[in-house]
Length: 323
Image (cartoon, rainbow, N blue to C red):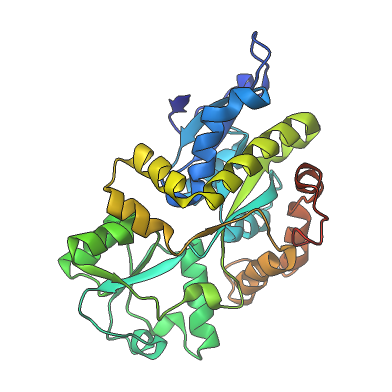
């Protein structure tokens, strides 16, 4: 397995190796949701694939790499698909779901139960990494509770998910949106707690966190797409059925404490199902808020979801998979 720096490109990403394996570049992050991507690289040769892992810090960065063709497959959030389509790009297609329930809110330890009214009061410093999927879900949930993000004391944090947690640790924020393992690490260190009462995965946008996607050029090689998806589905099912394996895998590529790894998985569900209608709700919300500009985006984005390959690989009908 090779780990490459993000952004490397070249036509060899789609050429076959002399040994008969098809080489692909696969995007990946060191987060629990993309453990299947990691295992895909280890198991690739069994599927006739030579998989080069390309590590990214954010879904947004992976989206850009998918758009420009420097990687072939990867993981993004449903909001990323809408934002990409709104920019006029049509370089990505979604092939499967990956994880739900992974978007979370954390609070300083000892704060006590919080409400959306508390956040909207403007008295609670709230750390965000604006425009990500967790941010969109937060804004949508505020809307549904009758509040506006403009009333929140929002502090936009640059950097990684761990940088976001540092603002909580230092007292610069009292609540943050984030994903694991950053929150689990903060909980272990004693300065953070999960704000499960602020469930941003229960909004009208749904719990979908991540999608397995491809650069659209890969559709010209359907047999490769099916090989990749078979590998992906097998690894995702392995992890979903064996949380001990999932925790061990996650701990292995991050080096984090075992208890942090185990805590990180508790609120996440893995699965290939993804709803085109639910996910187009992201586009509708983004256009309604003026974040996206194209009023036709909710319908346009539906065309970016491809079900036929996953249906063939899993033996399930397209409606069963969420179409």
